[in-house]
Image (cartoon, rainbow, N blue to C red):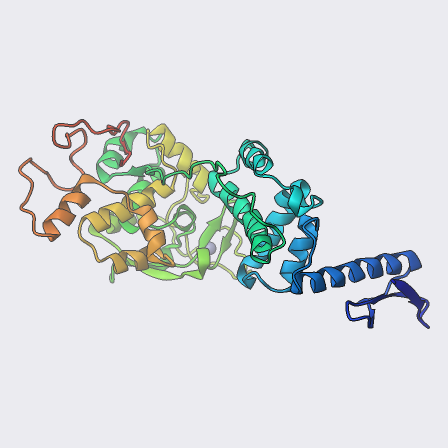
Length: 400
Ligand SMILES: [Zn+2]
């Protein structure tokens, strides 16, 4: 029987009897007797269930939550999954199934839950629905494994189809060149940022925070260190994931640098507060007409005006695609872009006809008979006799 005892401190402790008939203390103490008693009742019930489960006599009317808690106690789940799982349980699974006895959870209800409760929630991706459902299913399957249930209700459940990865838009050098005059900015800074971004693959906030002193003009290299944090309007001393890196500069990148610094005072500091409080002694390469950082939203707006509707990351994808298509070593591209792994880089490299031809050539195919100009000049060409499914328009190649 659950009971309580009063401690010399004036607080209360819960006591209960475990499955072997031994008296046990509930962990922790409580200011009120009723709370201590409640904790003791819970602990005793839990101990009974645990014992019942281990000798195979746990009732199928145990609730979903009780069963889950017991599983967690027994560390049946891998620990690194635990955090995500617990949050998914609390947010989506318990509100629906927590108090339901396991043997009353039926396939039809599960199906309806997945189809309506989960699927229609705005902004919830099919992948997340799969995640929630698999956490739920794991618990039910464990109940079958331990012979608490005869069968799992998690069969023939209609899950939403997973999105296939959509090709993302990117900017080609050709389109950037064609759009030069359309940025709606007579200082030319955004057109320069676009061109520079396609040459070095930097993130938009890295371009906005690029200090002139970080450019080794002689060595033709950019050291990517600072970023401009748009939200706080401050300079941070390290890029995403802390990946300070050095990127080679092309001839075109050097040209842009040269024209950008011409006639400017480069030693006066950037005029933006640095997070670490250090006194800045270098100008930013890309500033607007007011001498302020050419920031990410402004770049995006200017690109949109010019018909380059890809956002700043379209430059990064453009860079990755160009570099890989041009035959660059994938590891070198990864280093330049500061990627943690190749998988991430592949997300940036957009498949193009050239890359397919290159692969065929690497495998020994002769060069295709149709005329292929230098990279990226084949907008509107046909793939065999079939029209491209997504003919590129407004300069933004939608690789498909
Ligand atoms: Zn600075």
